[in-house]
Length: 106
Image (tube, rainbow, N blue to C red):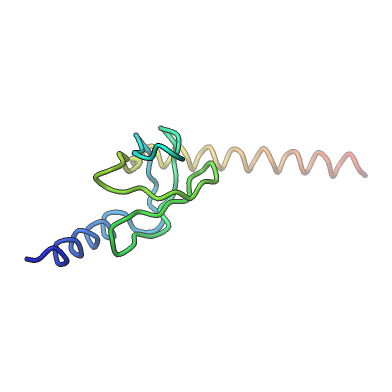
């Protein structure tokens, strides 16, 4: 197998492992100029043909991670459930504030 075939297969493996929407947590980033903070969480946007994983970080950054250079992990099902519960609670609190503001304006 030549180098192109190897890299192509590796990129496809990353595409299969990290489809769009997969949630990741950054352990460390090998980027001295503009790294994303350790512990940051984000959502996979896509994996390119070189195997680079393009991210939308929760802090608004869009810097990609490079397998083999950067360290990261998938969030567990339990962590995903916790995130969803937190998001639902925040939405409920926002709705309560909107209702309260509407009632006060009457």
